[in-house]
Amino acid sequence: MAFEEGLAQSEKAYNQLTEVSSLFAKAVTEDFFFTWQWWFGVALFVIPWIVWIIFRKKDSTGRLLLAGFLTIILSLTIDLAALSLGLWSYPMVIIPLAPFLFLPYHFSIAPVGIMFALQIKPKMNSLLKGVIFAAIAAFGGMNFFNAIDFYNPKNWSTLYDFIIFLTLYYVAYAVTKMESYSKLDKG
Image 1 (tube, rainbow, N blue to C red):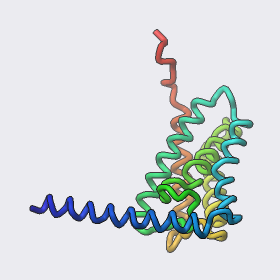
Image 2 (image 1 turned 180 degrees about the horizontal axis):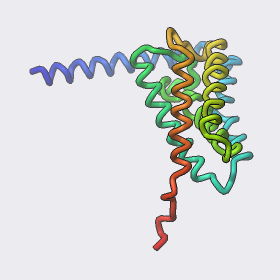
Image 3 (image 1 turned 30 degrees about the vertical axis):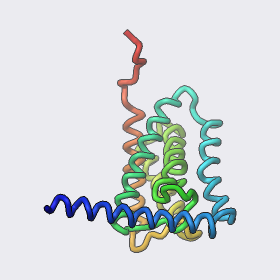
Image 4 (image 1 turned 60 degrees about the vertical axis):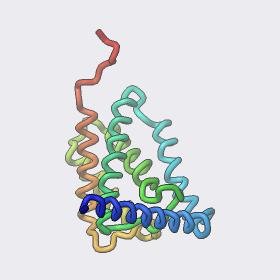
């Protein structure tokens, strides 16, 4: 009997989650759409990728994209866990579909920022470069987004953001250093 009760509770939770998503969609379509904040959020999705496509290190595109995609997966995972625990929130929603998932931080700013950091001065001390990147992202970026109401850290310390960004950088860095890349059709 407990299993069936668990299924009923899960279905009830999903129904509530659908209701919450509808509230976010309503906020986007009725309150945020076409405000300067909304346009800024849209630009944060698009412009970093355009800049990266133009200025990327073309012979390392595959390695950098792998690092970027891994950054997307990890940042989404971290954010979903933190949002579920109520550690922080994103009051400004850009896309009404799946409001917790489609944020420019996950799909554009973090991965493109890390890909640029990886390709700039590749022989520089990786710890120093990671610390610089994490400091700019956490103390600069996250505080900026808090100031314009895109991010609400609640009681979350910026130092924790620094650790998260440093970890994201180092995981992406490790992926770009892998030597096991070769073509699949190679004999």
